[in-house]
Image: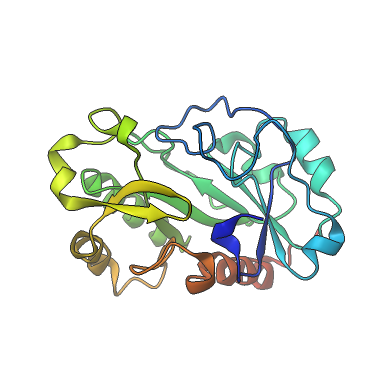
Length: 233
């Protein structure tokens, strides 16, 4: 069980084992410390799932080995998929969360509005705020929800994917099971306050906790997508 999901109505599923070839930076799935052995598939039973929503590919990517992923997850009545590759979005049978900037220095501009797009996930830092502004402006004009995902960084990222000039805006905290650098509350509020009047902007976690039971935005957005598009396949 993913400790981040304890108390929430979501359960993880990673149907295909092995490292993710996308090489997003940072990527806690590929790095040491991920809560599950990535060389073993994570396929909860229907009994384990119960009434929960299955989050497909909290690690790896649902577009990679697409046909196998769809086949292995078709048993789940409630599910959504995660991908950072746009090519298959229209082909998913259930709602999709699309990470639009798997590489932090660029982002993918959607020229369409797929009915199965549950939300856009944008990886958010203190040094990519212009990019985040552009993402929010573009997608929310299309009435597509945007989830701001503030990134956690380990020591190895400092001076690499982490802009060390912004180190004073981050603090080391216990992130679920590992110590990571995370944005200080003052700067979280500075970024999120710009969008307080935009009802299509959400955050992953809250200012006080990364735990899903205190957030529940994915649960809300899944139900919203199902109600809007009638997608239960």
